[in-house]
Image 1 (cartoon, rainbow, N blue to C red):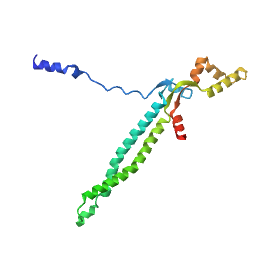
Image 2: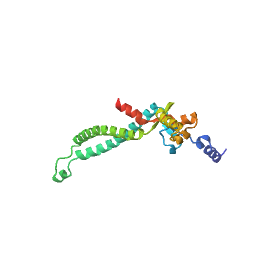
Image 3: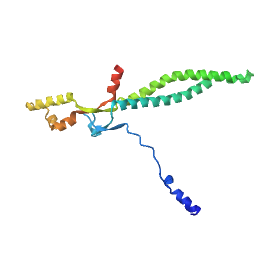
Image 4: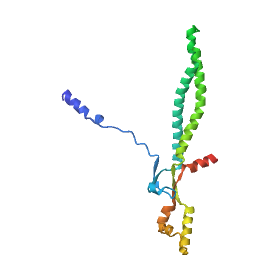
Length: 204
């Protein structure tokens, strides 16, 4: 086999032609049937976290990433501010002042950077939490054991009983109920909002 043939064989070898991809990232949320409080125009399914643990983990990861990004930018900003604060005034060289003490300037920059960053860390933590909370409050969490929204069901049963007594009300509501399966599908709670968990945590 000549060199050209060997080169062509290497070009079409499995190691040269097969492209490997990273493993797919697991979905944070999955589809669940829409509940009675969900907007029916959005469709029969909504995206929800599988449980409260996955919701809490995603919220924590969101806060951690945003806080880290904020702190990274704060380090750069504090370093620039410290350098500007510790450098000698521009007019000193015009009057033949003493030479710049770079050791002292380095210490000054370290002090100013540390003080600036310490103050920024608290702000970054608050920014990360506020940004994530505003989104995760409306996030849905799947209910493992579906329950019937009896408050809404009781209202419907009331109007159905009124219609049965011949008072002329609630006929439309009654027609929408249908059989028991349709009743459960309409009033079955399949998910709840993240604000339900977050409000309980804040109350504690």
